[in-house]
Amino acid sequence: MAERRGTTDDDVVGKAYDHQLAMRLLAYTRPYARWVALAIVVLFLTSLLDLAGPYLTKIAIDEHIARRDLSGLGRIALLYLAVVVGGFALEYLQFYVMQWVGQRIVFDLRVQVLRHLHRQELAFFDRNPVGRLMTRVTSDIQALHELFTTGVVAIFGDFVTLIGIIVVMFVLDWRLALVANIVLPVLLAISMLFRSRVRASYRDIRSRVAAMNSFLQEHITGMRVVQIFGHEGGSRRRFDGLNSAHRDAQLRTVLYYALFFPAVEIVSAVATGLILWFGGGRIVQNALEFGVLVAFMQYAERFFRPISDLSEKYNTFQAAMASSERIFKLLDRQPAIHSRRGARRLERARGHIVFENVRFAYDPDEPVLHDLSFEVQPGERLALVGATGAGKTSILSVLTRLYEIQGGRVLLDGIDIRDLDVQDLRRQVGVVLQDVFLFAGDIERNIRLGETRITSEQVRRAAQLVSADRFIDKLPQGYAAEVTERGSTLSVGQRQLLALSRVLAFDPAILVLDEATSSIDTETEILIRAALHRLLEGRTALVVAHRLSTIQDCDRILVLHRGRLRESGTHAELLGQRGLYARLHELQFRDENAA
Image (cartoon, rainbow, N blue to C red; front, side):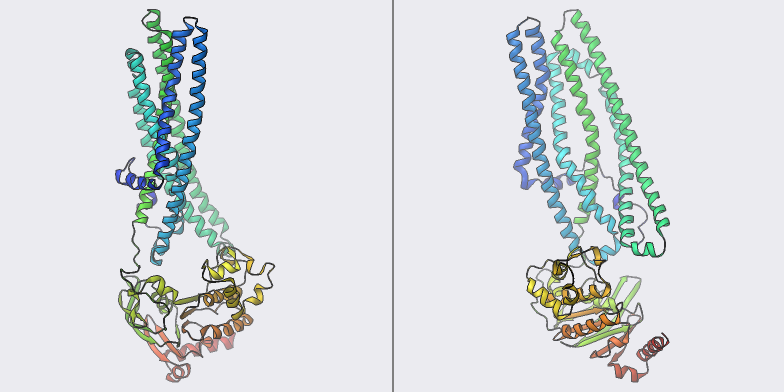
């Protein structure tokens, strides 16, 4: 799917601070409020201990070294050591607590986002590249992790430290404090310039990361096509372009940091020089104690460190604001298909299906189904045939409410499917597609799909009924044998047998087969046909097939053309009508003979 032009979610940078977003983020800390409060208290104590060091140095110099009081100097030294050790212990505790809280918040948020994605209709995934959604669950949530662990609390600590240093400086000597703060306007100007440059650079990086994620997901999934058509070179060239753009954006950020921190050091050195010049002059004039000057030097060093940290944390904070905006935009999206309030529950359907004047389109300008009406009796086997694009698969998607119809009604056992609980509805329908999707894991897990109500015995019984046990038992680990991603190590026929086992294990009332035997060898097709006969017993079935030979024993056949019902009847009746079905049969029979 081509990406929309213009601004996308990945280009969103957002405000440096958004109160509404901040409040929503803060809500995730509520389950861990006590731990967050502990971290804040510990951080406050750490800042106080950090302020105590230079002041103790001042006391040691002015009240003990200058007076040659060695016993008093020893006590101050021990107190200084206790402050350093206490600060280390408190920093360790604060870091551990915030990491603990941050990891749990990230866990909660990732679970919430994944559950929300599970609730979205298929049309949502048609419009949104997988790589972009992966970015939401990975990179964006990781940005929030950095905010919770090293952002908010650290910023609070830096502010406390800054205010404390300023207060102590003015208490010690207000004249020297004014001299030390002369450079603040210059430092603020440098910080503002740095933030504006990093803001634009960060937006570029986020956009490049999302583009790379989308490209990699698409090309790794489609590696078979890439290799078959020898597209490796073109794929590498495209990725080189995306990767180079990301590298250049990162290097621009590195450049800004490489300029900012030395600039802060220069300003800090100027401030230190001013303190030495003005403070030294006052010492010569006996207007200032030497210990005060030394303390000011240490405070000045501590003063510029949190300013640098704040400028650096600005990037973390803005990244979190932008990521939270994208995440909350996703979470705020209500699925177009959902269970209505007071939806009716359905334990086990009889399988009576009715389509009444159903209109459906993926794109409003290109209708797929036009006022389609037909009925399927409980236990009936109904085949759907027609050229590609006739609407066969769309009927199956509509029946399970993977997509919503725009007009008419679909009834199951006399109930409009929109009035049924969505999960109940989908539990009634078992689907076997032409392209079977298998998950990384073992054989049993792929049949059971994590459903705890299905026992291991039921899994094995389902596999035996469809003859899948013939190849499973030959595997070294049997049902515990590992399945690679998408089942790439299994043949098409083996994957189809596993799909049939899966459906039988879930025991649906309605069976949907969409080209289930179109891509397999003759021997496997014989096995699958035998399995289908057992699987169809007592169930309503809708069968889509291009090979008309596979549907001749169906109770009734519907012939579709451009989303409209053109013919209906048994195989023999349709051949006797000499209509569209007969022409399809004749063309296919001629092609098979020619082959």
